[in-house]
Length: 124
Image 1: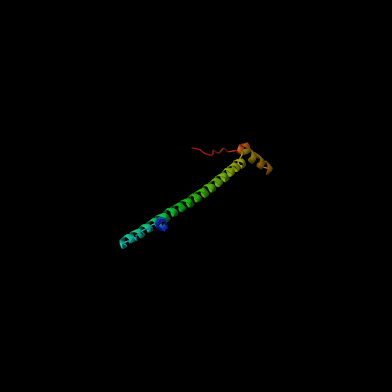
Image 2: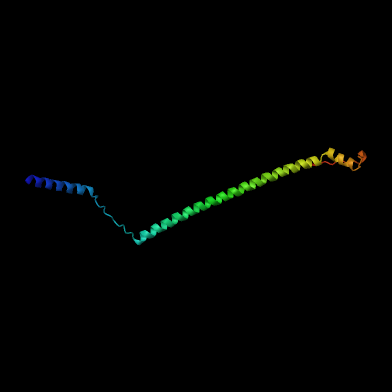
């Protein structure tokens, strides 16, 4: 009987030790109290950071819009230059001597070499 009591006592101690090891220690929680000045400072900091982010995003958006406008204007300039080149080629063709001579013959006009005056286009 004595041996049985010793075994029970040892088992109780062993189970109590296991029970103590299985229980997680409680963490102490500390509440941080902020003073009014600190709270206002943190709120002001968050507002400033938010305003800075909005400003940067707005600036990037405006830059993107200006780049789009610039590319649109460059496209229009290129189209206009192409049209000017085509019109210049057409003017050169229409003002050629051979074409004018051909149109004059079609209209029944005859060249009179005594009535020809030479006009210089760009005289300095």
